[in-house]
Every structure is written in structure tokens, then in C-alpha cells.
Image (cartoon, rainbow, N blue to C red):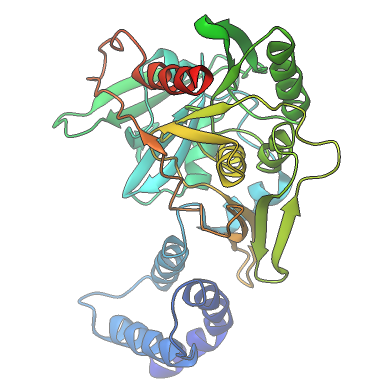
Length: 388
């Protein structure tokens, strides 16, 4: 490749690279550095690669690799989409209405955030923290979360093969799951001994805030003296529904802080009429607690309405949208996120529990151990508060 050709390619791709680099570099501590020196370094690397690699370089492949790397450096939810993937994303069409019930993040491979309650994945024994090394025979090492979630979708009754690795196990497990259309999961309420109410929220949807308020109010009217919200393994739903759900329990104060590059910070506060549920509360969390469930937990803890019991949450509190690129591809990029009421970051950090309760390790294919130490700890602590 001639110097003139390389220079022409750089001129064409520089705006694309500048756009991506600004997103990545400004998201980190720049310390006053300018963007252009980094572009000049990239120019040098590109020229050295195309001019000195042992064989002729596929420029398209090289550029796609660079763009994937840039997006990967932002966060696990951001991704570079090819022209074909961009067409799919813009159409809003998935591979089908059914899936296997997994929510994913990236940590070298794709990793399970949560397996939806009663889903094919949950029934097969997949758990938060499992690594997915391949989907349908395709390795996930270079697969984005966006593409991984799309690969899990399909027609009802169709099958998808996964290669799963758990913990420090040396050998992966081959799992074949049959896709299903996920049924709606409404909050489920019951009364525990000692007049402690328990509400399980399996997912968030538009109707969840009202349904959660109704379920909690029902327990309160039945004489519950305290309330447990179980948000373990709860990751799905519009992220804003977590904030709306918090309104049932918080009468005044900040529920969350919204932050974006364009708007800066905006406080979301409780409104008149909020806070009808006044019971002492505990919230159960684990690594599968993500998105709207994290915002609900953060609002309750930040307003001293509850303590969290269990494990650190996933850290998924950002919003993504598509940014078109001149080559027909795009960046699926986090452009805003939610913070705790105190303004602390949630995204990629998660919420540390007030009362840590480690989950027992379970070998793949083995039944879960008897008992529920996290729930038992919550009952113990709320029982002490009631007694005092």
C-alpha cells in the first residue's frame, strides 16, 4: 500500500476515529490532554502496521478491529456495530420474540448478569456470574453484549447451544436451551412469620410500580410490621421504572440523579403523595440485581428507608443509543446514566450491600442448597427492629 493510499484512508477515517476517541477519552481522566496527539499516534500505528506487517493488511478488518477496541474501552454496554448490524438496530427488529431469559455483560467473555425467573436458562441451572464462552458455536471473546443478546433471541421453540463456564471449573459445560416467549412476571406478595411482609419482584415493566405499590399496601393493611423486597436476579425492564417504584416508599428527598454529557446533572425527587408505604424495610440483592432494580435499591438506601442485604449488585445504570458513523456502521454507546441520591456512581461499580451475605457456591448441574441465608438474615434483622 502506497503512502498516498494510506493518507487517503486516514483522511476518510479520522472523523470517525475522532468521534469514537472523544467518547472514550473524555469518559476517563484526561488530565488536560488534547485528543489530536492521540490521533497522530493512531496515524503512526496505522502506517507502521500497513507498511511493515509481514503480509498485506486487510484495511477493512484493521479498521473494524480498531473501532471494536475503542468501543470496548468505554464500558461493557457500548459496542461498535457493523453496517449490517446497524441496519438491524435501526429497524428495531430482533431475531424473534422468544429468548432464553439471560441478561449479559462483558468480562473477557460474555457473562451472565441474571437468569430470569422460570426461564429456560434458570431451569437449566445458569446463575449470575457464569461465563458464556460460545453462543451457537460462535466464540464470545469478541462478541458485544448487543450482539450476544440478539443471538439469544429467536422463534419460539427454536434451540440455541451455549458453552458455559462457572467459577474456577476447568471444563466448560455444553447447554442447549429452547427459546420461549417470556411471560409477564407481576410482583408476588406473601406474609412471613412474625408479621413480616415479603414481595418478590422478578422483573420491571410499565405496570410494575403500581403493582408493587398495591402488593406492599395490601401487606401493610393486613398487619405487616416490616417489609422485605427481594430483587435478587432482577435485571430486566425500563430503567426508569425502578425510580417510579421507589415513590411508593419514599415520601420526600432525592430518588436518583440523572447525568448526561448534554444535560449535566438533574435531580429526580419525590413528589406529593409519595411514600404511602411506611414499614421498616430490607432489600435483598445479588450480582443479578441490575438496572431498574438497582435504582430502586439505591433510592431506598439513599433515603434511609431500607438496608440492602446480600451481595454487590451488577452496576448497570446507563442508557445507550445509536450514533451513526460515516461508513454505515455505528456506535451503540452509553450516553447517560443514573447516580445514587448522593450522586455516587452505580454503573460498572454496583451497590455494596449494607449487610453482606455471600451466596453459596453451586457446582454446575448440582441442586441449590437448602435454606436461604440472605432471606433468613433479613428476617432476623427486621425482627430485631420490630422487637425494639
